Image (cartoon, rainbow, N blue to C red; front, side, top):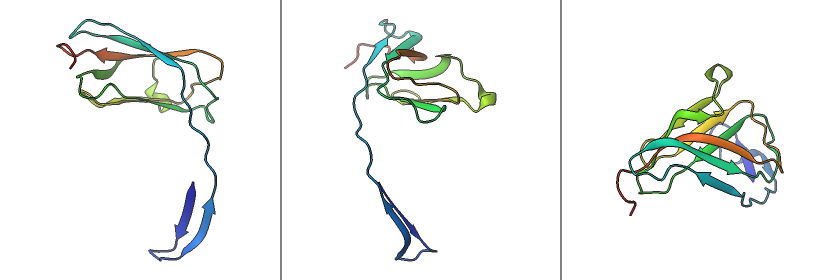
Length: 127
């Protein structure tokens, strides 16, 4: 990662820092949901975290298979979100991603965790 700070549109930086990042690895996860065409039901993601979250706030970005017609929704999210705590859920519509923000969600390595979201299956056979 590199950060350079420039003064008021200047071309010469006034401060610069270069730090190594960290390796990104796979996380074991599984999905369980309804297989009926055109049905909306809760879908569950169970995952095994590789490392702890650095802060108590966690943002899940869930992206359905592209071009198939799944619609992710916030109506049946579990654990329940609490807007007064700054938690939120935003759905992107058909084939769109779902953003799920928890302000107090502990991710602990070696502890299987499950979240549930609403999933509207496509009305016809996927391509």
